[in-house]
Length: 419
Length: 151
Image 1 (cartoon, rainbow over the protein chains, first blue to last red):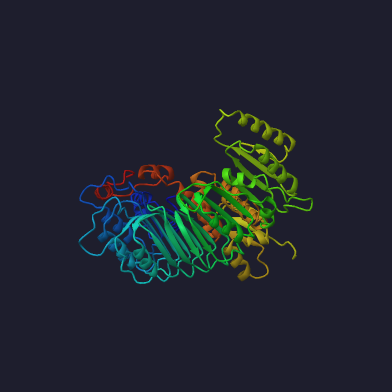
Image 2 (cartoon, rainbow over the protein chains, first blue to last red; image 1 turned 45 degrees about the vertical axis):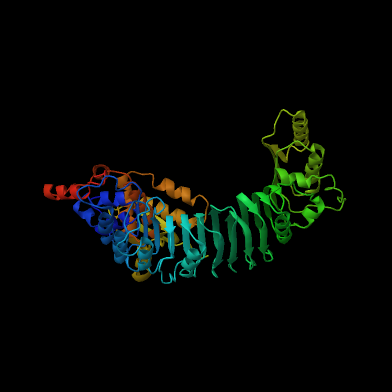
């Protein structure tokens, strides 16, 4: 190793990213001491400066390391730092920094500095940022940002902010293609307009009935958790959609046509029937469907689902390839009239995989009929998994039901498995 | 397809290896030598690389030229670098001189992975590197890096 030319040593070292390893390399020998200029990604783990002494601060140690690099493109800082430190680092990285990830910890450490711009505002100096990820952000007011023209990816995990603050912050990031907002507290009526947005994952908490209006004509992948009213008008590119609300109700969904939609997941405790039927109606081209909603009902009362006609359901989703349905919704497919329009010409052409989760033994006969219908009319069915969950076994009908299911499995042992 | 022309590569210690031209061209240095050397260049000297290392380099080039899209290319690479640090350093040096980016990246990354989480002493030991700092310089470094438990 000692005989390796400097250029190769530098090339090898440029693969390192953890600041601890970089610091160690600088102490190995004279040749190695100045062999770190080509490192392009630098990561400072959370506990890296737990043992500082001699009047050093994280700010200064990080700055010294950044100063020895000729072109830093990615910086990840999980350890504590101040706004002044951040400003000094970004002054040094200038226009080369493409990706920045910071543990802001505003929510834990609420001391807003009185000296100089806030940490958020300091980020402005990294004009050419393409990706920004922030953990634990408290946004009392929108940061005074100029437009981040190149910013494509924005991820905020753990934030407390108000609607107007979010809207204003997003005005500085018009070219986003990926937007992730997780664990965002304080939002009530979210209005997002991002014309280049392709992927988005939005998770609101705090208020269980947040409303969301999204204008993103290029959107392809969308996940929403914690919203009660959802309006997404332009959805001609939408391929994957997931809507869930584990804390509150889903009252209303307003989507444009979902002609490109390939996979749909709808989950929650309670959805209004209007919302459910609208989603199912628009998602006619869907290939993968996941449904796990416990109850329906437009008001406080939790109601069971009305009957769903088996034939209509599968005829209106002819491309369905994988299907995962839970408890109450499966029960709706098993009403006494659900199978009445089945005739010999009926077929479920594309269905290959089905997962059914059953929670109660009620209507056992109907349930068995529906399972049999799936196997009978699903020409391409390759796998059916029946999951039996949380059934109170004090009821003797549970045992009977289980026996029926086992018999069914036995008769169709190539297809069916039980969990 | 054109005829399978072969090239002979000669290492620093005189060992010769006959390889398909396509395989040899994986090294941009050899490619350049052939293109500028004229029609007679069937034997190419590689004085920076010993026979042992050259044979391994050829093995790498063969796999990457003959089956570049195979599913087991990744596992080939992983197994290829399961060698001791001295061999890795020779491979890095050879791929640098012979201008074979894929192999340079692979060997550099593997060597770098061997530094991760090691203390300064451990790095010196693993790679037989001499500590050429003066005691004063060493003391200075220790002070500056006292936060790094790996020092």
